[in-house]
Image (cartoon, rainbow, N blue to C red):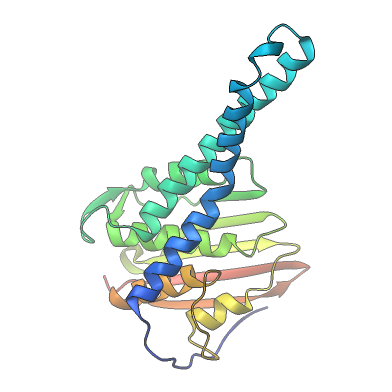
Length: 231
């Protein structure tokens, strides 16, 4: 069964510190694919002397594939983080949900995480809903280190609730995420947990109530993250 966690209070946060940690987290997450692109290009540039060797041709083709895949990963992460943690539109501006579905599709390409958007998803949402939605998806993906499914739906009156649910037979226990979102145990922000602080504070600023539940039923572990918008 899913069970909710008690909410307590913590001290205020330093915006500059949050910005520093988010930037550090971004550069850490994008360093791997960028390094792979750089290494692949170095190999290709220094491999001209063996241009006719069949073995070298095969290795060169693999390097080209690595560069292409790593470049795509870098772009996907850049686009996702730009929407989730950056400023593109005014919060009330209407945006196309298809932009989010495309970003999510690229972000989780060739991963073990399957994303499913329900039929209740509207065609357009406000920019602040778009930011929070993507932040919720990225947050729950952190527990699916062994793979799993993430289902997204909109519910409630006027579809003002965003409901994101992750499920898997095995996952990383979401205790840290819960403690940050529900303001328990005086957790301090660091490079690992700063995205959870960011989405929590973003929801607070927008007047969005959040709930977070997790548990196990019939051998399947699940996490449910709900954002309830004021209108």
